[in-house]
Amino acid sequence: MIPNNASPVRVGIVTATDPRDRWSFSGTHRQMVSALEADHGAVEVLGPFPGLRLQDAIGRRLNSLTIRVHNKRYDFLHSMIASWFQGRYFQREALRRGCGALFAPAAANEIACIPAGLPVLYSPDATFRLVAGNYQRYSSLYGFSWREADRIEARAISRAQAIVVSSRWAADSVCADYGFDRGRIRFASYGPNLQHPPTREEALQRLSVDRVSEGPRILFLAVEWERKGGAIAHQAWLELLTRGVNARFTVVGCSPSGLDPRAEVIPVLDKNDPIQEAKLRSIILESHFLLVPTRADCTPIAFSEAAAFGIPVITTDVGGVSSVVSDGISGAVLSFEAPASAYAEAIQSAWSDSVAYRDLVLGSRGRYEDTLNWDAWARTISECLQQIAAPQGGEAIRRA
Image (cartoon, helix red, strand yellow):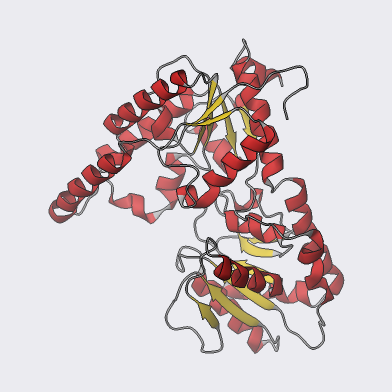
């Protein structure tokens, strides 16, 4: 929120893709733009970068050769030459539109080569070293491509007057791996990627379930079965059945093989289609737990969405997950090594105790109302932008 005696700085939102596109950053960019426009007002959308398709085509052509020859990839979209062209474009656009500050959400490549001048607020959900160390797809990069992408991350971080992250995990890497001043880091949690979040009354209706006649409905909501720990979730459900818990298991977003035939599988539900969105909404409202024993993650938007619906999340302590799900308050956050039986136990113990389950539901919805929403996020971003645009720049952030 902008103080009454201050005029909002005109902010340029820097993204190579079109942030208003529903597919940009899985819809998160779109939510960010809407929230900032509502809270800050003076916003200029500078993307998309007009040369992005050409850069992507060059990268695909190069990799079609390098994969055949060396079984290695060159990430051209995160190369210095690609960054240079993007940086020059966004600098020109920002100056042409009279921007006084830049906001770069998950946009290291776009800002790394922007010349000094305009203050920058950078907001990554993870650093390059974090994703490269946790996501398998980066293992096929050439060594020089890895180093180039890491150099771009370092330049983006050093270019920023302040950085806003969504987890302690990301903040620790920004400081330890790239030497950024912790005093110039702020935290802002992502909200849900929902056009119409449920009301509190809708979210809490799951508390009225007849616990004697009904077992828990367990939802696995993810596109990547393996990375999100689908096999562990499936085994945890089977473990509940062997314990005599009449649990139901629904998989939405993927179509894995080898599941017990009692599981319900819905391969695809597009939230951008009103009919499919309504069906997904109904499934979530009827579920009692979101079970995602993820193997690698940043700060999953799906967990913010679960909080909006008041669903306790049973998940794993990896990446920035513990900054979204509060163990014992809005769900359970288990160790990476925890077996399927531990996930089953977490669900059974919560379900068998009506007070414990009620507290988790209220805690989950409370996390959404307090922090996991776009209004709270926009207030933090807006305040930071005003501070970095002040004459003292980053020092104003440190003293705040």
